[in-house]
Length: 413
Image (cartoon, rainbow, N blue to C red; front, side, top):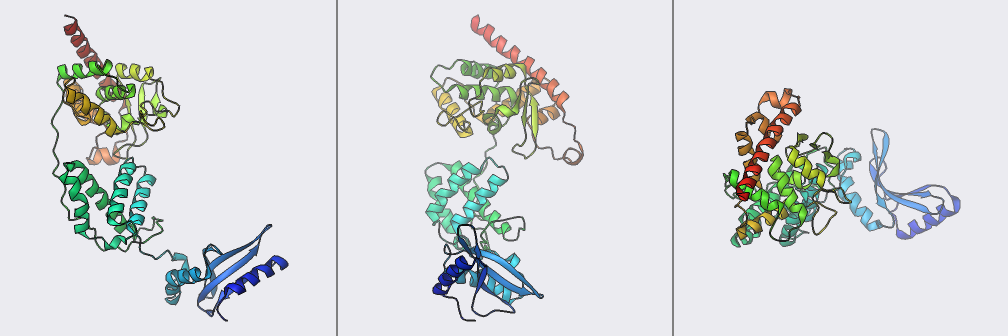
C-alpha cells in the first residue's frame, strides 16, 4: 500500500462526509506487524480524524491513539509513530505500554516534581515552584534535564550564598536535589503518570554539601513570655491584626507555624474547643484541645469569606505565609519592643514552660504532634489520647493565666 498523502486525506474526509461511513487510511505497508493509521468517523456536525498506532500481535489487532488531525499533521504523526511505537512493534512488545519517549527538559522535570508535591498534599509546593522556576530560567528551561552538570548547579547556588542568604542557598540546593531524586525514581515508578521520561543517570545536586544546621536553643522565660504576649495584645505600631492573633495562638498551643497560619473554619470545633487537622507535616492527622484563653481568642475572630482565620494582608483569598509571620516578628524584635524570638523559639518555649506547668513529656510530644518512633507508637497504639491532651491543656491554661495575671499585677504596682 502506498504512503499516505495530504491530498488523499482531504479526499477521504469529503467522501466520509458524503457517505456517512467510517474509513481508515493506512500509511504505507505494515500488515502483519503494525503501522500508522488515520481513522475517520462521522459525527452529527463534522468528521473526526484520529491518528492511531495499529499493531498485530498474537493474532489480534490493537490500536493506541496518537492525536487528532489536523492538530497533528501527517509529518508529525509519522515522527511520533516512529519515535514512540515503531521500535516497540519491531521488538514484539505491546503498544499499550508505549509512552512519550522524548527525554524531559529541565522545565519538564521541575514542573512534574512540583505537580507531584501538589498531588501528595505537600504545602511546600509553592515555595519549591518559586525556587525551581528561577533555577530553570538560569540553567535553561528547554535544556535536557540529563545534561545538567554539578558545577552548573553550584554556579546557581553560589551567588545566593555570597549575598548572605545562606538558608535560601541551602533551600535551593534542596529543591534541585529533590527534583532530580524524584525524576530518577519516576523512571521506573508504575504509579507515576508523568508524560516524560528523563533518562537521568545521576543527580547533579547530590554531591553539593548542605549548609551546617544550627540547632536552636532559645526559649522565653516567664517574664519574656508575658512581655511578648502583652505587646501582641496591644502593639505600639499599626499591625495587620491577624498577624498578632496568629502569634498568640502559637504561644498558647505550641503548634507548627504552618499549621496555625493555615487555620480554616472547617478545622475549628468551637463546641469542643478542638482544632483538627486532617494532614500535617508528618503526614498524620492531628487534633488538639486548646486552653480556654486560646478558645476565647479563636471564637472572637470572624473568619473571612474564604474561611481563613489569619488571611494575608495582600491577598485575603490565601492565609498569611509562615515567612510573612516570621518577618513580622523579626521587625518588632529588631525595634527592641519585644524579646528576641523566632516562631520556632515559640514552639520551644511552649515545650519548656508546659513542662514546668506539670504536663508529662509524652503528652507534650503528642500535643505538638512530634513523630514517635518506637514500634508500639508507630504500628500498634491507635488511642487518640484526647482525654490526656485535654487534661494537659487545662494545666497549661491555668499556668498561662497565672503568668499573665502576675505580669498584670506587677505592671499595676
